[in-house]
Figure 1: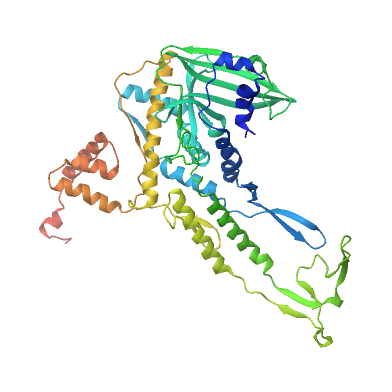
Figure 2: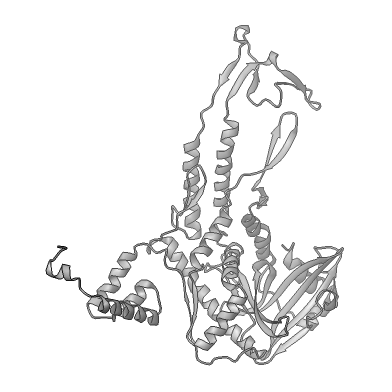
Length: 504
């Protein structure tokens, strides 16, 4: 989305000094990330996620070059299975979907938070941006206040992708300060809005700066915010906040590109070569049908001729709209006849090769072999049920750990922002938990037998066994037991069955 993201900001501010007032006004610190890391986001991970990466490490990736007779050198796009998108979407779906639920122990606070989540369409937006997070290596949830049409204050949750956020400081792998970047165009001018979120002692300061340029690849000069944002304050100071107004989330994968960076890496960051191998074989599979189609060999004397203007070489050909016939120069006069050439297609070999590459790709990104299958008709995902011992399930749980903590931080951030703006008061005592969707886990009968065994041995009460089997709350489990007992008590024995009687 942004070309040379760091170059537009860091280089201009810290190296060229063209906008020296930024450094003095915002007290810019050294960026804890380097330029190269953002090039991965912008030039590798994002194009792969979108389905087309032209070159990688100075070699063609999805861009293919070839030479044709009469038309010279040409290029085409390699056919692709789009595994970067498929893998990111599948991991996001496994972790967070409509069955997930955010639980808050305090009922009043739970009502406030659930109302905010509903108004922000949070569950749908979070799942979408969770997919972007796995693709680009991170995302940010930003909490702010906005006035509705009636002038009432509303808590809003904004989602920011990794390419639009630069961390300014961090501790214990948690980002404490950050720079948000958004670009827009108005007429022939390009605008870049920088939102600085920084700590100055105990104060949390948010500063906004707008820059205008005639070139979309340059930051340009600072201009008044009112040109685009009438109600946006240049500076807002918070004195009661204990945490930043944003929460940074990343995949639970160690960053082996920049070991000192707080940023995360893409789910498929270490499987780029596997993606190319998959697409190479898939492209060959599709072209097998085009290149391996039936050919009819005819004498060269029976076709037209074409003279290359540069080499003066003469080539004979049939009508270019007829793809069946091929010219061949027979030496013997007796062989001046038409011959049919029917080539066998290597369909099964291609399918087997694609499946092998898919399994290797799955292992690289945390899925079990067989998660993605190709049957010659299309790509299928086999994660409706997942074994508890499988790599997919372990990866799911690993990512859930860091995502659950981020959601807890989001609730705390919402509470602090709400109290700061007087939207509602913070409830001092509350606990937050996340119920992730475990319905994909295989062998629920075995899981049920485990809890029933504990209950039958007198180790746990009946409601606890039911709670874990049905994945419901303690109150719901007790209510189910009570209803079942009442139903059994109301059932009267059938007289005929009891005494063996029948209709006379």
